[in-house]
Length: 269
Image (cartoon, rainbow, N blue to C red; front, side, top):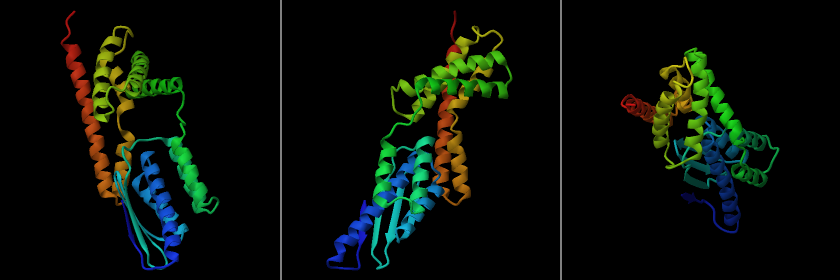
């Protein structure tokens, strides 16, 4: 949604409007890209403000979770406001680092507006993800490492590595429903049932030990951290919403593990 208020009329109006529209487009696209790749709200607001100031505008920006509000005002008092929804938020550190570096280059005057906007679109359209086998190895090592640190059982750690890789692949590449809460619940169910299956295979492992490692992949730690960070920096609404979402995801995961545990506990052979 775009709202415009002009204080000038005549031949300069079209040029001035085009300049403001280009500036706003880049600012709102940058804000949306940063939020979608895991940037904290406060950091995004700071970067957007610096972009506007670099272009010679007074900037007011407010980001409330998935909604972005940006207002710019030029030296003649002409005002333009844009509102945009970002859609689902996720984490993509590779893209975040590239976008963050791009904004810094623009603010430092090392790239112009047109080239910066084109490069931003190229970054968003590119796929920087690692091959699946690399991600599966990373998932397995994370699960095994967490289990060994938290519990200390070697066999449980190995079982957690196997189970973590399987559940990670299932929840990320076999998407029956594109719903984070369903994914968390189904992950919990698979972890509980998988732990019960692997326990007799890996002698000396424990049911709780395998679960404690495999579950760590699905704990929304970044969301919790960002939420507390934003609350401490004054973005109370965004921070509270993120903490609420993290709590809901944790509840879904716990209910999934509970459901899976009840299921295997009731199986008779």
